[in-house]
Length: 174
Image (cartoon, rainbow, N blue to C red; front, top):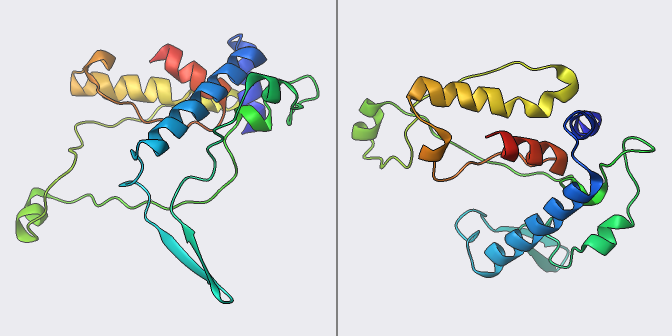
């Protein structure tokens, strides 16, 4: 995936500086949201017993509140010798879990459930595998068209942010 981020950066002229700036802003926004409690309802605390101690995991450990352009500029590219993708403008390697229940109207009534969202449309799209991180754009635009919506009709767009180059591309083209 890292090579595809490098390919996106080259093909769409996304510079190292643009990627580093995006990464710093992303960490700053995430830290502000964490500090203000916006993630409290999104992260389920997990306790791990280690000998006599209990370790509590209850926050995103990938957020770097002290990220800076100077610090990121010191990092070496990780996928290509002359590349632009670094550990600092890529997401951290970590694990997580999520669960979504997709149910019928009948199940909502039977189990007295309150829906949080409604699936209005969906779509898939194929792109050149060398720039696979761009696929969310045609897939999303196709789903929006099927729903009769425009991007401006959306309140929030959730997208995978594995690499700054890919995220910048998606943000610019949505």
